[in-house]
Amino acid sequence: MRILITNDDGVHAPGLEVLEEIAKALSDDIWIVAPSEEQSGAGHSLTLTRPLRLRQHDDKCWSVTGTPTDAVMMGINKVLADEPPDLLLSGVNRGANLAEDVTYSGTVSAAMEGALAGIPSVALSQAYAREGMGDLVPFEAARAWGARVLRPIIDYDFPPRTLINVNFPALPAGEVKGVRVANQGMRDYGRLEITENRDPRGYRYYWFGLGPMVHTPEHSTDLEAIAEGFVAVTPLHLDMTHHASVERLGKAFEA
Picture 1 (cartoon, rainbow, N blue to C red):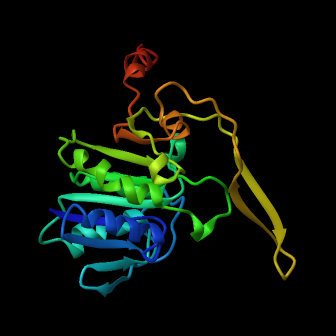
Picture 2 (cartoon, rainbow, N blue to C red; picture 1 turned 90 degrees about the horizontal axis):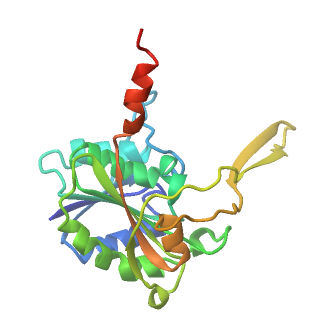
């Protein structure tokens, strides 16, 4: 089985090393094509206004000067053009991708791109307990549970245009309670923090951050699963049509 792995934290990120370890427990044919630098929050963006550069680090490791979507496109259509991957894994992200996070996440978007290409694709993210941990974020739960979670997924018959989003709780491996398949949750919007300061020349600049948000997880959502100590596994699909509204909205345009 040929596995392509990528991420949005960059080719040198600790979580990518963890994902490579996980992938090697499943196959000996592992390829890495990842962004050359961190692309957190890049979403499903595609680089169209400047050229991309592809750098080879070793026989099966490449980096791309672009977004996670760029990296997947280059991986499938350039690096592995002669023999496409059987599975795409994205992560392991430093930080959870739960609820509406999936709309911003480069990690999830890389898996979306794989799904668009018809490749079974999984995004993996590691929650952490407090902000400001940087490279000290522990990946113990992901490292211990990653292959265990992926083995049933490999045998799963993915419906077209779908992907799977996996989040590991911020717990030591031995305290993880198990795996729960859960719906995508939704928090109350409002945790954006904007830090304002001045550069050395006196000009103002602004920096986006995410502050704490009080939320009440609904029953059986990814938010609840993580809060209760489970690995959250959420199937997502790329059809964003709100089918229940099609007929009602159509009537608004009837003469």
